[in-house]
Length: 633
Figure 1 (tube, rainbow, N blue to C red):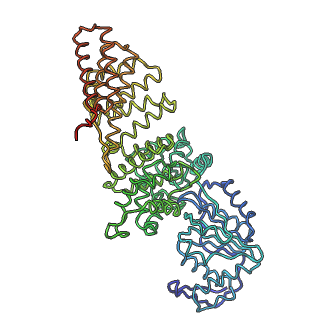
Figure 2 (tube, rainbow, N blue to C red):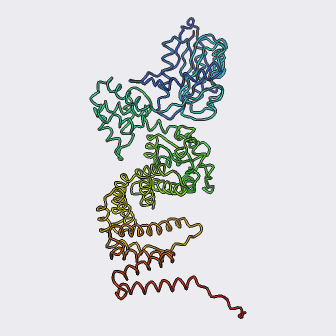
């Protein structure tokens, strides 16, 4: 075996072979196989899936592509196979960084000279030597395993996959975050690698801290911490190192991590990666984003990920990406390089293509079989994307998400799915959701709690919404009164009648007057973006007065002055909303009760009778049309 010198760019790479130094010493390990991290988890279920895939294919050599998002432990699993091969005295263990095809070619070329491949000749190009090495893999009787770590360009790797072994003595394991269909071709099996299970995460944290003699950092929040980190192996590794370095127990770290002011750069810092487990988490999760931004549809990957990041990591419907709100947003924030004149709007096809692009690069998961939860992303991916979103874009992202969820709500998407997505948006947006007129989503979610029989959860929910509305909009604002109405109804739902009555008593002085003044006629103007919101506001106000009347009637009785006053104002509101027949019927009922309780000669009864006659005359004038006189030309 001779010493090897490599020179030149790979396109013109040449290998200069020195004087042979003797026969190859088998077994041989080429490349830097990563050390297994402290407390490495064997992950028997994943390993079983990988091993089982071998028997499920007719090809003698199986290339297993361990596909998954950044930080799920693919490289560590591949390293485990390499270390086991060394223990088993496999003749050749080759580890290659496959982030660029050029690096793989160079590694193959060097290997060809290191093992004295007959066709690897001094002075020829690196590609020629690499092909000679692949031919040797196909024909040798020696056992071998090739690890291709972190494939980022599957198309460029196509000519450089190791071939099938004629003697069945070779194996290939590859890792990638890509989800391209080409990866499953050529007899290769794709094995999905997900995050740790809850049990694996707990086992890892306990073993890692024990190995560092830091068991005192374990406490009752250990499981909660693992859940907050999304069971991501890389994040757990960084967090454990941070806790050991700073002597911070799980509960304290969880508080820091949950703080909205804390950033991943601080909580999962690069210097905490004491054993080279992987890159800094935020960098690892977003490593592919810049590359994806330059792929078709060009310029949409970054805005699409930023929008997805404010929704529920557990999933949202694919239909969201075909809606007008999302299309308008992507058109506005598409990278200038993709449309210099800014004239070409993004189509719904391109919007959905952007979704698939993020899926291929492992930044999200787009699984049609998951129904309304089709589009998912890891919580740390979402957090990293949010932290890297410019503050100037956040308001428009919140507006877009609110409008997109509104579109889905009217399409009848499953309420539980919409609820979690609204909650995720609200957690990110805070007051901004109210500023962009998206707070109607909060009311819809609250009502859906009651509709789904979750009355106990509805009370604290409406308490929070009422307090926020009062703080931002004022005590007498219509939206605050709407929220307090819902709170009173929630109280009734759990049998707290006194609390419900107290809310209505507090609002009695001004609620009907304030609401009656807000009922305005709404014309549906074709193409008006705000027509729907105006219509909903009028409907909300009517619903508030109807519910207020119902509760007063239940608690005070139908003839109580407060009940009659509310009924009279609801009648006027019906009239202003274009519901003349309902207005007249309501006013007739008011007069009936007043005549019973006060007498027909009472001034209030007489005033109501006069108003009822006015409504009837106006209604007749609007709807009665005289027949045309046939004698007139």
